[in-house]
Image (cartoon, rainbow, N blue to C red; front, side, top):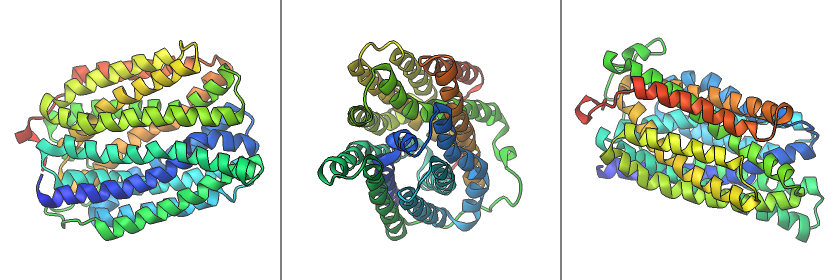
Length: 408
């Protein structure tokens, strides 16, 4: 990578790490906060979780297209600022229904941020180095998320035990810190990120799937399937595993909070390390092979969670799953960007993002419905089956472009 892309990737990574640290302060414990505000069913928590992904899925394509026209940086900065303000508002909520609306606002901000950030990296980094660049970016985001649950849990416990806040008010404290970090990340993005002007004409109309080279259209659709499966798997595991551990092992809310803070710390650490190195492996070893290996092995680890006899084994399986899932994410991101023309990359990245978020919408709803009405173990099997189908389709239809075939 040249000096400019390296600096740009670093600056973008710092900004995203800040906002993800803020999200990590409260994200894993949002189901417990919703319970304290009146949610009584896992399905209600599932709808709250899905509000984020529903709004993101609905707007990722138009917002990604807007970044093709207005520039990536503007969308990134506005998205980060909006996210920070919405996070502050969580602390003012008095009913779990309020959380649904706030999650929807954060989904809109994510629709501004992630397609634009991914497209910006692909715009500035040459095809043979995109795995490394996207792996670094994703690792930074995960590193920010990594420290969040432990710090958020510590803030909640400090407010509860030292400041003698009641249980509800103690859960509000991490939202104030998360909001500050969201606004800080917007300032960092505004000051640090540089963007070259577009070098190709912007496509005026349409979703622009037609702009993908004909020989890679089947690959594009198979990657949509993998993005859907990844979104389904990613969105359900966090909130459901918190409920699963609490109910399966009969833990109190306070003990569940501290236990899952440890679990998310170790799984986040494994995810961060894996993404950082596996982006480089994707550039050298090949995207498709790494995708197939990571997707298959991560789902075997997902199934293993359902058979875990102790909390410790759940933590071990979560850590293994996180490392294996992270191994295919840079390959998935870089392969999709390699087949997208720059002139429509924001919109096409939005299409991929929307596919992942449709999976993320369905993941918590289907997962918690299975959890409530079929059995606590069934969500882990359901996500694995969906992923296995996507893997088979990708193996048949997916074709990895050579460097000289990749879009610049």
